[in-house]
Length: 94
Image 1 (cartoon, rainbow, N blue to C red):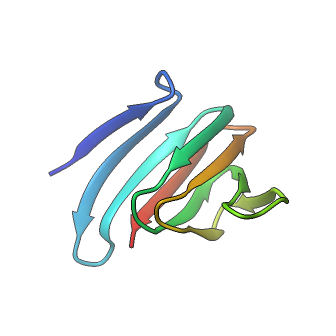
Image 2 (cartoon, rainbow, N blue to C red):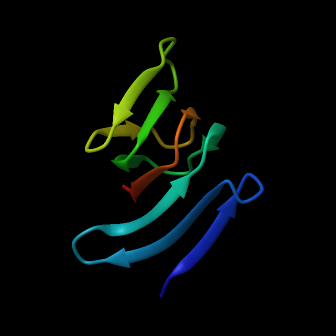
């Protein structure tokens, strides 16, 4: 079953799914903007296209993740994103 979600007045949209190879995950697209997301459990984010400028919990430096890059977000935390161009991602819930 697919679960469609929309955030930040439609600027971020995702489709959630579960599969044997990926587990519980969502794939989505973000348009230009700045966003803050909270996590309930650890997440693995893979940038599919575009780029994300990311400030992870406990960090003071922003880091750019381009297509093919992966970063991890701890559970029960908040991370910040700056998006300069439409960017697609895969989020796995660990």
